Image (cartoon, rainbow, N blue to C red; front, side, top):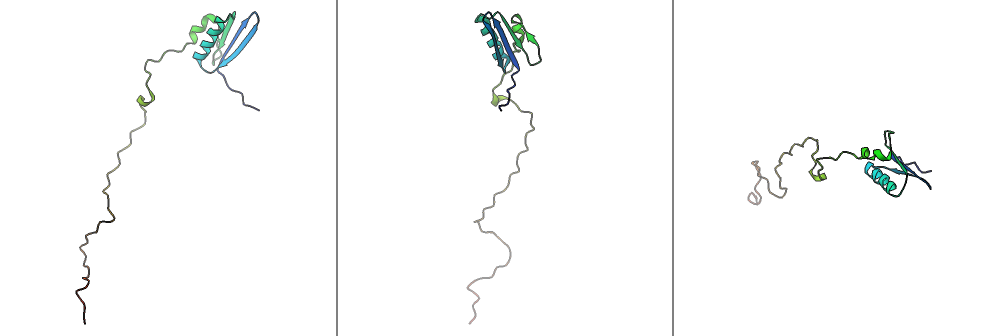
Length: 114
């Protein structure tokens, strides 16, 4: 059994031939659909908002959300995360380089006894 899809904006319209019911998830899309139904000759168009308010066809302008003034691209948006501390510089140790030890090392080849 399929799970029902929750659609926050419900649009229904009536004409002399019958009625039409539509569900949309976005306010702009719901407003566009309601205006299209009015152009197609439906007499009464209503839109139900997610808060349960029913808008008549002459109240559809209230559905239009306010325009945002600062729209930035995703790369330009600033996050509220703290900046990480820079990592401490480590000196690189080359494994192939000989080490210089001040410790005593035996001489090879000079101390032969006969």
